[in-house]
Image (cartoon, rainbow, N blue to C red; front, side, top):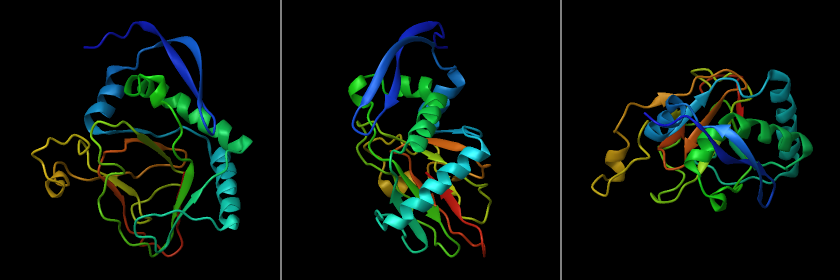
Length: 220
C-alpha cells in the first residue's frame, strides 16, 4: 500500500503560457484513483461540471466555429476540431476540472516544468462520422502528457463514443504497435453529460462511428 499521509504539494493554475503554482498541504490521492490511472492509462469521473456549465461551454464552442479555424483530426469527415479561447468562462471551467484531478496530476507530473497547457480545444462528432483508427496521441514512452476529455452532452452507444484500450500505454520494446492494440478489450466511454476521461497520451484510443440521425457528441 502507499502512504496516504498529508504532504506539501503544489496546486496548479494554468494560464495560456505558464502554470502558476501556490504552496498548500493536500492529501495524497487514494490508491484506487492514482493506481487505476497508472495501471490502466485512464481515469473516469462521471460528474466534473454541472449541466448549466456544459451549456455555457457549448456556447463557447459554437462561437469558435464562427472563426473558421479548424485543426487536424483523424477521420475528419463529420468531425470538427477547433481551438478554444481562454475566455473567463473557459478558464474558470478548466481550473475547476483540474481541481478534480489535482492529486492524480500531482503524482503523475511531479516536476513543475511538466505542468503546462499544450492545447485547449473542442471536438464535435456529427451523425455519419466514421470510426477512427486506433492510435495514441504520442509515441514517446519516456514523455508524460495527459488529455482530459469532458463530455457536454450524454454520450450514447450510437453517437460515436470514445474507446480506449486499457494498459496500452505500457509498451515494452518487444511489443509491436500492431500487437499493442490487442492487449486488452476496448472500453467504450458511455457517459453522462458533465463527465470526463483523464487519459495518458500514450494510451491507444479512437473515436467510434456516429450512427445516429440527429445526435452529436461535443467535448472539450
